[in-house]
Image 1 (spheres, rainbow, N blue to C red):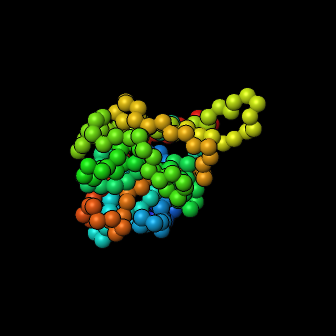
Image 2: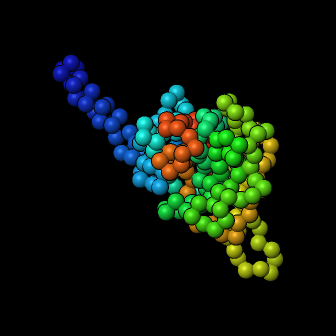
Image 3: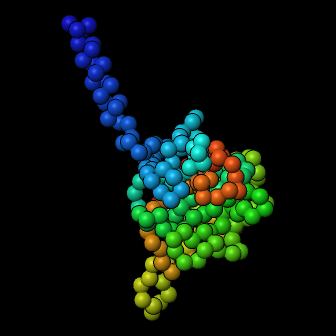
Length: 220
């Protein structure tokens, strides 16, 4: 009797395991579910997890993409270790909306024009914010680097109308490189991006940015 019931038991176990898998177009990493799909940078089809490390990889034809963390995250502290091949161009989106408009904390590591931890206003006014981020120290090329990002609501001065002012701060290996205040934000999405080589010619296809030890703690 026990032997006869074994195939059914195996089927139930297999069904449970299948049900626990992420939905198509998503992956699980760092204790969170991430989704991807068509974007201006590609569909992230080459992004994958290897030994607890998220590998943001270009396809053979140079497509990148964005992985979006499921849920809304208006205020938080994010820490992650990052290693970027050179040359490679990517970043971490914060305060973004469903149309990919938001602020990118840059992990742009190519030639002398790169920038680590600076702010790029993607789809919102501002362009590349001058005076933020770094390229040389404290960033360590070809090594793991500690990146910390905080997004917090600014206090509203007494007597003033309520507003949605937000501060974005970035630390690289313990050194603060960015303080950026914005009067409003388009959304509350967080994403990990690798730029598409289709759109730029400053690096060759196949480059990667690696992320590990991801943590996001909401503060609001």
